[in-house]
Length: 93
View 1: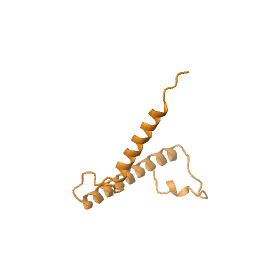
View 2 (view 1 turned 90 degrees about the horizontal axis):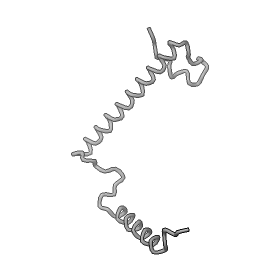
View 3 (view 1 turned 180 degrees about the vertical axis):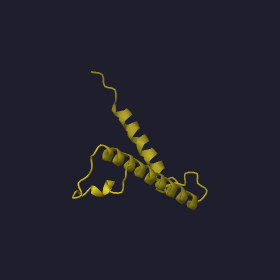
View 4 (view 1 turned 45 degrees about the vertical axis):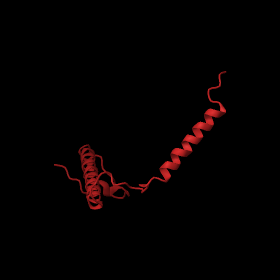
């Protein structure tokens, strides 16, 4: 059986990994959240708020669609179920 990794190769990989990790640890911009090209922290906060609003809208539309399909088929949560609140406000015509 041929041996692909000798001790020198393993040492070089370990040293290169340690150097790369060290460079990441001491980089000048090691904040947990970078600016990502935004002009100000306020712009970043506004972007985050918009993303949160979009995710909330996506969730509500999916909930409405799924609950509506279930109600049309006659499937619903029992009022005694702890999950009955999920589709309580969905109405179909």
